[in-house]
Each structure stands twice: as structure tokens, then as C-alpha cells.
Amino acid sequence: MQRRRWALFGGRLIKKTIWGNFSWPAGFVRSGSGTETVFEDIVWWVKAMADRVYIAIDLGASSGRHLAGSFDGKKLVLEELYRFDNGPVPVGDSLHWDVLGLWMHVLQGLRIVRQKFGPTVASIGVDTWGVDFGLLGRGDVLLGNPHHYRDPRTNGVMERAIELVGRETIFRHTGLQFMQFNTLYQLLAMKWSQSPLLEVAQTFLMMPDLFHWLLTGVKSNEFTNATTTQFFDPVKHDWANELLKSLDLPTHIFLPISEPGTKLGRLRPQVVRETGLNGAEVILPGTHDTASAVMAVPAASKPGEQPNWCYISLGTWALMGVEVPRPVITPEVSSFNFTNEGGVGGTIRLLKNITGLWLVQECRRVWHLAGRRWDWEQLNRLSGSARPLVSFIDPDSPEFLAPQDMPQAIREFCRRTGQVVPEDEGAILRCALESIAMKFRFVFERCEKLVGRRIEVIHIVGGGTQNKQLCQAAADACGRPVVAGPVEATAIGNAMMQAVAWGDVSSIAEAREVIRTSFPMDYYEPRNTAAWEDAYERFLKLLQ
Image 1 (tube, helix red, strand yellow):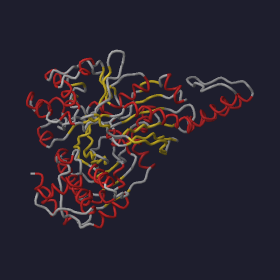
Image 2 (cartoon, rainbow, N blue to C red; image 1 turned 180 degrees about the vertical axis):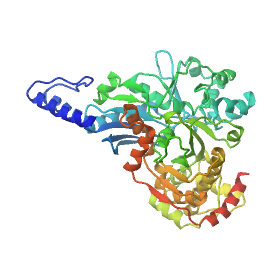
Image 3 (cartoon, rainbow, N blue to C red; image 1 turned 30 degrees about the horizontal axis):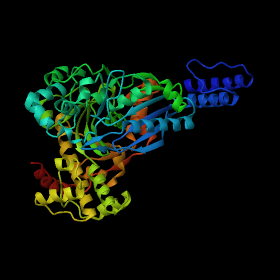
Image 4 (tube, helix red, strand yellow; image 1 turned 90 degrees about the vertical axis):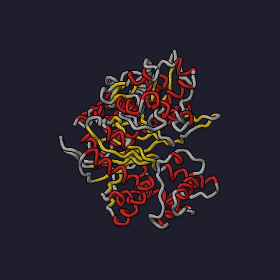
């Protein structure tokens, strides 16, 4: 009803403009001058009031996109407006992110937003991967290009930190799983190499915080991404300052924690001039891409009811876990190397990182370099025709983190563990995909143990849902039905968090109901589970 009243009011505004008797509504800023521009702005304003438009800027480790979510009060329609490549930039022996290049793409995407939707949209939010960061010095100078999480500077740093303060101490303060690229070890690598940047740093910004600052001039540390650092205390809901001090790391560079749904403010004047957008608010989504993806899990639940589902956010990485109301910091969680990461609405994502389609992406890259330019459909046919359940790898074994030749690394693992060595492309892909599904089973069993109940359904969201072979393999390996979709879960969760912030939907539960009715899902029932049970015993031996 509110939007209808606005639309009718907008009609009267146009009438008044035609007769020269017009005043702009409070908060609306014109984009230019002249009769044509005035009329154009009014038309865009009326359209904006009829359907609220949220812009999700989703920066992934291999690409970035600007997507528009148009919401009419019942259904969300998502449209990709701009896409660009992203990836590590080698400089000497280091890997960096091209943050200024990414910023230029952010601005270009917003210009396209202006062309499509006119001078004003409701809001903009940015999500990215976790752990990586930028530092600002005096006068808010950006101190260098942020490092990529696969940079080798953290080799051996985690082990040295554990020797200094103890594994139990780090876990007790943070509840986070141990991975060598966590922000804690990146900062320690800088300290122990006597980096001058760390010495002069005055502000610490995670990657999405950095882009929100570039958009608005407002510096913030958003909750969900802060929890990926391994120096955030999820029980105290604040930085783990005691741990930081014990490792002689600075604490003054960290800002107070901001929650998803926080309205940071409007675009900088310079950004308005660059893009033509005015009036748009910048709103914090769950800035960690997995937090936004889990926001978009189309699960139904009743108030006070314990969820009977788990999720897999599937892409380059596979993040598998359960949504819980508070941190779970127990010896069992530590022994399983699970993690407590922040979710939207004050929830915790109790999950484990699993190497996902990185294995397949790297195989394809190596084959492309060799002149075998398989597209994804061809690769799916090759893997589908290969013999099933022959050989397995541990997807999370260190040799698969950043090998020069992924197919050769897979062959070598199979050879070293006394298995049949996959030689052709189809056999290598089948080995990789079935191994990922087996790791899902391994983590799934631990999810059930940690929550103390049977999980009835697995929700898989994200771009990886387009790999139907892996979705079916997940159902087969885990013996549970799989609901796959939505594909663009991260952008959808980003946009719907903006809707919650505006009050356009009343809650995250209502947002998930909108998502269920707005986007298609695929359903997979377990098949041939006996064969997978037998093969799982062989897989477990590889993990010992």
C-alpha cells in the first residue's frame, strides 16, 4: 500500500511539473537541470517508488558483478548488470589484489546502474571473500595493494603462532578453524618480516570495508567479515584484544563492530559525480559472501523451532555447516576444526571450509594452457562418462592449495596412496567431484554430531549448484535429499539484507520466504547409496 500511495503521489508530481508548479520531495536530489532532465528524473523517481531497487556488488575471488534486485513487495527479481574478471596479480614473489582496478570496475558498474535505473536507487551493498584486508595510514592513505590469501608469506606462520601461545588459547579466544591464510597469520607475517606498512597503519579495513569506505568515506568493520580473521571473539562480540596483545600485534587499528543492516550513509560527492547516482544509501549486507549466501538459503522454519537443515555454499570453496543462535566453542568443535563465523540477524555459522570447485577450475585452466579448450558442458560430459567411485583424493590436502598443475597433483596423490591413477580428463574430473562429495559426507556427519540431532535436508546454494553431477553426488554420498538453489545466493542475500534494513520485509525468515517464491530450485534424491557406503570406507582411510 505504501508504494501505491507513492506511485499515485508521483503521478501528481508529474502533473504539477507539466504546469510548472512543482517541488521535489524531501531527500530527493536532482541529477541536473533543464525541462527534459527534470521530467526524466521524475519518471525514474516514480519507478523507484513503485519497485524498490537494491544494488548488490558481489566481489568474488575470480570475478565481480553488479546485480540489481527489484522488489515489488512480494517477489524479488534479480538482474546482472555488469561483470568483470578478478584474480591474483603476481608481483615478484608476492600475490596481490588489484584494488584500484577493482574500484574502477565498481564505478563503471554503478554508471551502468544509473543508465538502467536512473539517478536514484534505494541502496547499495558490497560483499567479498573473507580474511584479506587493506591498511590506511595517516590522512587515510591506502598503504599498498592488499595481499591475496594464497600469497606464500604465511607459510609456516600458523605453526609458529601456535608454538608461541598455544592452539587451545587461539581457539578459546576466537572459535575459528585453523587455516594458514587467516588474517591473524597475515598480520603476523607482516610483523615478523618487519613490514613498515604495519608500523604506520592507523586503520584496518577488511576488503568489503575498504570498498564501503571508498563509496561513502565512512570507515567500519562489519561483523560477518571480522569473524573470519581469527582475532575476533564471538562470545564477547568484539576483537580478541588479549590474544592480539599476547602476539604483540597492534590493537588501535581496529574499529568498533558494525552489524549487517547498518546504514553507513550516502555516496561521496565524488562518487555521485562519477556515476550520476544520487540519493542512494550504502547499507552493510552480510559482507562476507558466505554470510550473504546463507541469508539466501530458502529454508522454512517456525519461530523457536530448531532448523533441520544444513547448508553448503558452493563455489571455488564449499562452506558447509549449520546456523546456530550462539557460538559453540568446545573441544569437539576444535578437534573437528570447525569454525564460528558471524551470520546475519545475530546468528552464528558453525561450519567448515572445504575445497570446492577450485579443483575443477584449476584442471580446466591447465588444460586450456595446453590447448584443450573444453567448455563446462564438455567437461561435464567427460566426467559423466567416466567410471564412478574408482579413486579419491582429500580435497583439503595441502598439495591442492595452489599447485602449478592440478591434474598432475591429483594423479600424484592417487599414485602415492596406492590407488588407480586417473589418466584422462574425464577420470580426473570424476575423481575430483566424487572426492568433494565424500568430504561433504565427512563434514555432514560432524555437523549432526555437533547439533545433536538428525539433519533431514541439505541446501546447496551458489554458482556451484549448476554442477548437477556434484549436487547428485552430494545426495548420494550423504544419503539425504538435496535442494539446490538459488544460483545467485550471495547477491540475493545481499539485496534482501538491504530490504530488511529498509523494513520492506519484516525479518530474515520473511526474506527467505520471498526467496523461496522468487527463484527456482532443483531437487536431488539419494541414489545407489550402498555403493557410496562401500566407497566411503576407502575414502576415510585416505584421511588417516
